[in-house]
View 1 (cartoon, helix red, strand yellow):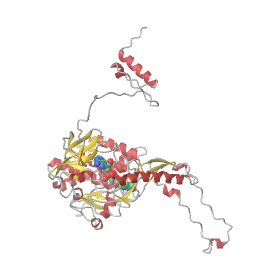
View 2 (cartoon, rainbow, N blue to C red):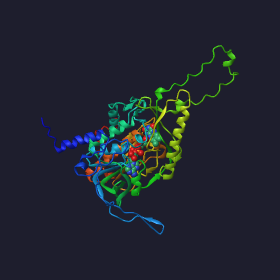
View 3 (cartoon, rainbow, N blue to C red):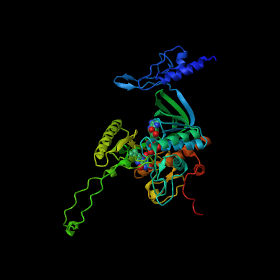
View 4 (tube, rainbow, N blue to C red):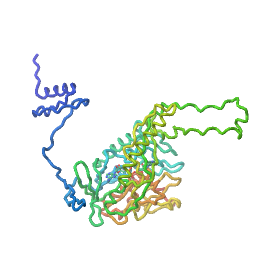
Length: 483
Ligand SMILES: Cc1cc2nc3c(=O)[nH]c(=O)nc-3n(C[C@H](O)[C@H](O)[C@H](O)COP(=O)(O)OP(=O)(O)OC[C@H]3O[C@@H](n4cnc5c(N)ncnc54)[C@H](O)[C@@H]3O)c2cc1C
């Protein structure tokens, strides 16, 4: 029998055997007569690399000049990367909820995120505890897209624990990242990762888009409505909106493993043959107890034997780059050294640091000044607001969120969502909780899409229409008024 091997088969065989031999054989290059790149030691073969363009420079380059000691950025045209109805900047809990809601309400949506994953502090910051999602003994106020996420996490193996009334659930960061990819893909949101929003495009009072910095240089995304879900209000600040600049505690969350392999010594029992005086007030007071290492090892996560450890950290300015650098470096050193001390305790030798959060725990920085703000008096009075767009939890009472808390005072075509919305300082710590960010993200997304649909400014949309859409999307807007 004669074997006939054509050129394609021959290349396939050579590719497979070269890969098996750990050589970076590239059939395309071989076919083009180019030499195969050398495989780097230890990496094995099968890599491919081509020259896209030779001797090129960046098309949209516009370097700054140093003029009389001042750095001057020249005026230049920026390429438009994308044009859409609603642009959401920031893919944290608020941004993902906003993007999905805007899309489900019928708008074309682009979601732009500086990192390579969704979830913001929730996943990148390893803040795994969903506080106030199910209100103790009362109503569950976070419903809609936030609740949908919790339900879907329940269906993922190892996605979530403690999903029951009165208890704050804890999620797995990887499951949450996976879920959010699934949800934005299902909604057909156009996504750009690795793009850092650095400027706003403004004409008069109208925000028309944002400028992003990426490996491709500076590019613009144009939109009819922009939602700032960056947590730090980067876009509304760049657009010129007024805000309050606040400080807060900045920590760094970590995860510790092998907690199912610790065996702390049992507390020594009091000898039973001591005379009664030994247990009386005259007896020598017991030596102070060494701090229980377990108390410093955080709370359980869905991963067996792995805890997440929260950190308060000092109150500092999360907009100051030198402070952020110092926090990152100090916190990482502290976490490592602290764990070594805990490991030195008898029975704790096997614990180890799984990871420190890739993202620093910045709680609050810029808070938008808005026509209305989330406030304590409304919570205390259990006020029923005509422009309510959701309720927040994490407190003994639910508190109403007015639509006005998402709008800048003067600028148009812009909404805020998440931890940077308008809120009195005493409410800021609950506004920033993850379920409440889902709620404001959901509302901002639906509102932006309605503004596009009705061709009006976000501040002019019909509130009753927004409330109807939100209810149709399973959001909680309070109990119907008793007739
Ligand atoms: C240490 C710590 C502990 C916490 N503990 C809890 C807790 O136990 N329970 C709880 O419910 N909440 C807790 N929180 C609060 C909660 O994690 C955050 O407030 C919440 O994640 C905020 O959501 P967000 O979407 O508004 O912002 P973020 O989660 O900050 O998301 C913002 C997103 O925008 C992106 N982004 C930022 N700037 C830009 C830009 N210029 N261009 C493009 N993208 C950008 C970020 O990368 C990020 O993905 C804690 C927070 C911290 C820091």
